[in-house]
Amino acid sequence: MLKSEISNLKSEIDLLVFDLGRVLVQIADDLDDAATRAGRSGLPGFTGDLSAHTRRGGNEEVARLLSGYERGNVATADYAGGIAAQVDADPDDVAAIHDAVLIRAFDGLSAFYDRLGDAPVLTACFSNTNAVHWARIADPDDPAFLDPDRLDFRFASHQIRRAKPDAEAYAYVEAATRVRPDRILFFDDLAENVAAATERGWQTEHVPRMDNPLPWVAERLAAYGVFP
Image (tube, rainbow, N blue to C red; front, side, top):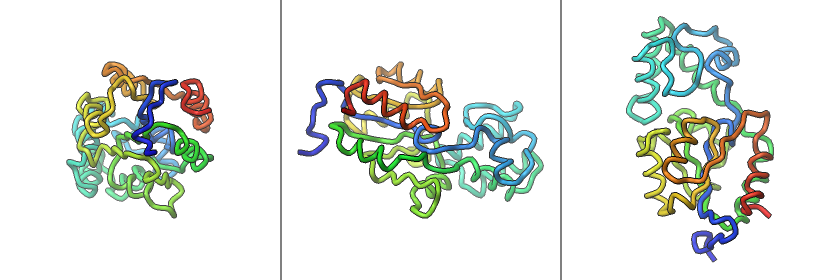
């Protein structure tokens, strides 16, 4: 029987949706941490929170470039060059810092996928990301390899041209999977993304920051009856 034909009556969940950063893959704490990892000093105006929805230092153009890059509307070279011009830096430094945001897949991910494969639900990732990071998580030789093809659906913001927490991004997932909102369980580390999903009627879990959240996520899935 296909997974799509299975009804999970105990948990009343048909689709599990996972964010990537701080849920399946380790990322830098913020742009300052990424700069340190890249061996670059922090760039004024390109520091702090990683979310494109945060205006760093009041620089609206930096926020616009980040948002456009996440939605696939700004090319990689234009993104790095545009931010570099705003913060008076070398585009190579911007690119290196941005690349260093992505670190490695969390330990135990393959075994976690195995358990998902045995569960009577569909699975998906739903991430605000970009072409460079997406290529890395799809590369088996990269420490950040997430083997996304092991999930039934993959929703990357730069490919669907929509980003969380905008309502249209969640609507896109609902339409593409044909799963009712109330039968979706969503895991994300950002409160604003969880709140937007909750507003649409999704079941939600706000993933706390920890060294490896996978055991915590597995415990929550067991509580919902998804994992035995």
